[in-house]
Image 1: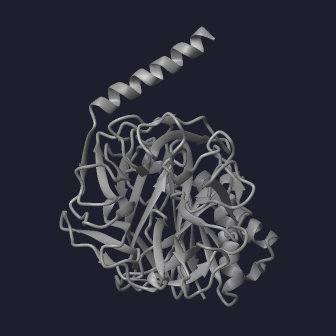
Image 2: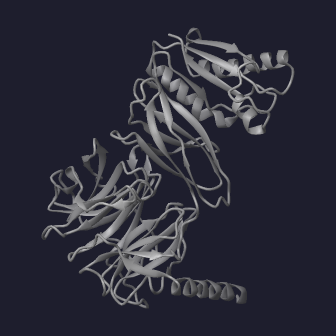
Length: 489
């Protein structure tokens, strides 16, 4: 018990010391009206927020970064603002998928306020859909927040069956859509009001606002952790994050000492304003930020493509994102201690995959990788398949990629392929030649077992004769050990 009390005391002391050094200042794009709910995509390139600056109705606005500075706010284009009131937005990290709340939206609703989804197409937010009865109720459902991989949805609701006025609810993306929303539980919710849930880029740090007793103002920001499908007991964020006024929506920038939140404290432009806190006393764990553009390998044109993230250890798809259909830009966030494949896929192109390992304890990094997709006619790609050293037996990490090849061949039934096996420079040339042939044939055997006709798959081995990298390092040798797929008909 003494050890537990000492640990709690140290936590409290750390929070006080950290908070005492924090500088809080309003952002430059606040207005005399309400401005709140900052949601930032592509690591700061776009900031979406809610405001009634243009009249009595709340609308979704966007501020974009151009040449190192922010432009003037403008209403977000498209159908998301087609309700009498629209706002409380949440976006995936790539900025291509949005959740928002609306009152009497043209699409139609279920309750007093409902949650909707939208997709960004040609620069406009369209394809608006009501999330349906698994999420919305006959009551007030609002303030959605989505995890950066798009798989966890949190929101606030005053529906029957909760602990108090408004509670926080959670849902998960499944193959059939969002699961039935469940109350986040008594560790988070109380007999008072819990609102504005935000889950960090590490899919663990969790913040929300509550008017429960013992705070600094009416609504205070609280800090918790989401681990193993449960929420830890929250702690008050303290001053200067909280004030004698209302404080909401605490959002931490990835791999940064900056946080944004909304507050009605004195010193702003008026009503609710958006504030920046530096240094952020409640940072999310470090992540790998990966970005680039997707291009046509032949003519260099920019492409909109599906960006699929797969956990190679479990074989499960953990995110389904998209590159921008105007700029070709993509942006993904990868967690520590995991190994992923990142696959770009577009109609009438051969998919492209890369492997990314993010070590545990990684201090956080930013990488750029442009992706080139080859048209099916004459296209080729390096397959993300793995073998034990000196063996031709496929490892389980290869399964997602091989299933992707099988799906590709089932979709394009007239395509025939050549599988080319390659080795590194360790060992005799004759031995490596046989090993490369065996590895190509192992891939063919897997595909035939997935009901792909054998006469559509040719194989060849090249041993160590065609290295991609002419170096003697471990990294170069790993690159050279590969199987490539070429379209031959």
